[in-house]
Image (cartoon, rainbow, N blue to C red; front, side, top):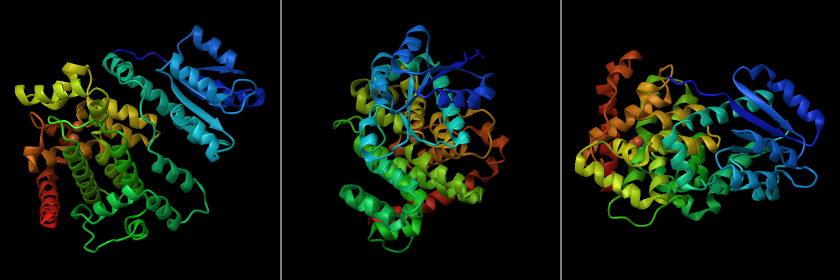
Length: 410
Ligand SMILES: [Fe+2]
Ligand SMILES: [Fe+2]
């Protein structure tokens, strides 16, 4: 395996005390990363002109050119660098100014453990970028979409300790299309609630915040990243596939584990696992249609056709995007590795493996919705985690969900 060079992180803050605090905080991580520090925007740009910087973490308020201005320049001149802003005031105007410019916004004071984790993740994402194909593709795709607005609103609200479930429901209600779509989903057999839900408040109460958050993100992603009409690639089929994979993954995880966080991660990763397809289709429609046609005509998998045309697959592209948005590591990994589970480090019962299985089960239950050769189940990977013994039961479980869903369609 080729060795990945150390990533370099640049911190920018006009206050010397803060910079020395950061130096101390990140000293123990020097074995795996390199750190640079700059006290002003011009100094930061000088550093960037001299050496390759992989992640820039900038303070928002600085005299002269501020953090947003710096990151706007970085976005133009060094599009591969991950841009993170640190701000003392997470008010609406601050956030509005940074949308589309930064990949992640951290509020001060930031918990050191959370901060380190953000930096580790950002650097791991940059490791993915050593893949020349992905690097090339991300630059062809151009500016990557920002986090959907309603989801960003929800996240902001949830940081407020005084927020209530009713406030959450209110945010969803404000977005009529979102609210209608979510109610339609929660009333589908995928949730098996056996009761009709007619308001976001009820939905939030019954399904819990994490599931609702995942749905808001999923619906938001599909409504904001969309391509034009195509006879070759159907977004609505992709949406049903994503929804089914999410509910299968949640069901399987619930059977295999009691870890609620893991179960929630499986749901959200299932919902977003193919977001890379959506991104590729919306940004490079001609090429993506070509991949779909190639898979259909030659009988290879869609993933193989993507590799031939783009040099990388939708898993890597999707994982990269979701990672930029700061979603939890296990979700990012599940998206990235769902077609490369054999290369997943330290395989265990985790969202990556469960989404891989759920995706496979979908192709077994709905073969007509597959493009090209259906994805194969990696039996060796499953054997290592004793999951293989359960696979037939899980297929039956998912079949039951599909049958109920079919009945609901009438
Ligand atoms: Fe996929
Ligand atoms: Fe899939």
